[in-house]
Length: 217
Ligand code: TYD
Image (cartoon, rainbow, N blue to C red; front, side):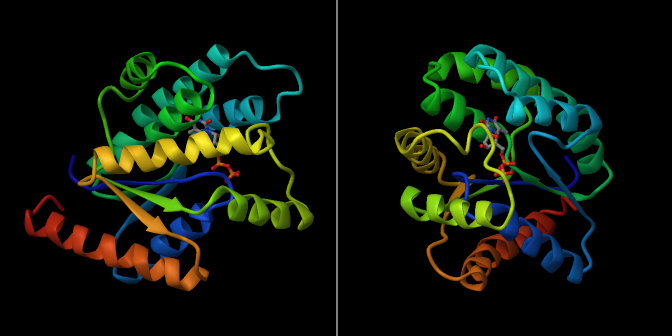
């Protein structure tokens, strides 16, 4: 691909969406063309799937859930991510394939091999060049999510899962980062927003310098 694909991951309430927005502004200030997107919901079809996935008021079967996330991703990769990368725009996505490994694999209990098969089918093998896991203990992220709820934002179907579910998801992200240290970088998000942003820049700026020196952009 012409431009780098960077994804943000982490448990609900970790602050990754804020960090993604701050990074997008910082890169634009440096004159880069940036495409900001998310999963689920990065395309018009995905926006409808997002509603179905997060707001369903019936019991959603775990396999149906896994396949709906995969459907969202298949559309997202082909209609948005690949064309943006080909046109030279840095793509920043709020969640991608690692979320399925963490939530549907570790969270719901699907086997790693099965999740990987479904993920590969959906992505066509396109993996991020860099993934930032915004890491926060579950208790702290729950507290942040609660504050968000008091500010009028509803908890979605997955936010509402219990603490042990979110512990499994966090553990899965930590394991992914340990397994792929080159691609996946852990960022401690326990401090203030600005401190976390500085940590994000410390990783992303050198990464982009190497990328452009290899004249990929
Ligand atoms: P997100 O947009 O991060 O939620 P928020 O609105 O709280 O910022 O993600 C929506 C939810 O979808 C989140 O709980 C994680 C879940 N999810 C999965 O379970 N599997 C996936 O593959 C993806 C992309 C998201």
